[in-house]
Image (tube, protein in one colour):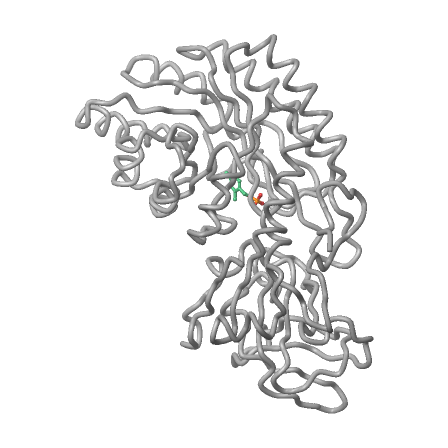
Length: 415
Ligand SMILES: *Cc1c(COP(=O)(O)O)cnc(C)c1O
């Protein structure tokens, strides 16, 4: 069966990218029941290497050659996933020294890694300098620790300046730039910081602007990319060395919810081509890149739970599962959503059965927040069936309060 390709299907929402055979979801080609037996226990997250790699390859094919593609590891830092991604992308974006360890263990090239994030501790900066990764400077204060590390280790720290621009990414699920922010250095402060960098033995690399996440509007992304280049050209006038890299950010969103339209990729690719052509003239030594997290991995993952009880309360059916918000906070609606909406969910061993009833999928936690699917139209499910949440390849396992209520942690498998 050919895997549907969301990268090339703008305007359509592919809620379920997994093939179905005899009612069973096929994950990595394996029927769900068989996979669950192999894993040994529920709940678990399963990631499909064929779906993820086909998707990344399709995106690469659409992306202009002169733009590098980086994977933002925090979306899914499972070591096996990172190892796979290393073979598919040009570089990795790290948000901690812990992620750096996983990236280096996976064989990624430190010269193609950048480390962003506020509040980097001195030891993390020290480790990053020793590894030779590019540090995206988030505050003038980080310079002191970088200089100390560089001096002690006898290496020139590689530094890019993360800029908090004077614009914002419109229509973003999460805005991370514009106005007062804990991310990056305010654009108006950057010339001063560049002058300071010029006074020290530092390898200046360029600029990083990350304006927001979870954006489904092509025009908003294009606008931010163009403004980022303008800003970088303006700031380059004060740089101590030519700009070698310009990280344009990412923000490509995933259509999680009913009514969401997937990102129309073609205008974004055309815009990147135009931005790259412009940059070739105005920042001739700069390598351009985008950094994507969820867009690369979300749809290739599924969270699998087992139904342990089926209750009817005053006419409403509850499917009580062995998993919940402790494993998958985002699907419960408590990870940044303003209004709770359902992630796509289905009964993974009755995946092609018609909807016969309305039911809610809940977890075993003693809180009404523990809701994985509210009033879903589902086939009639029994105790022992699998309730599955789709689009769960990003911000699942490591973004959830795993200790809450002291239940066992879920497993993760790459199939
Ligand atoms: C979180 C983050 C990303 C990835 O965001 P997605 O929404 O998963 O694409 C990329 N870059 C930076 C700097 C981030 O903080």
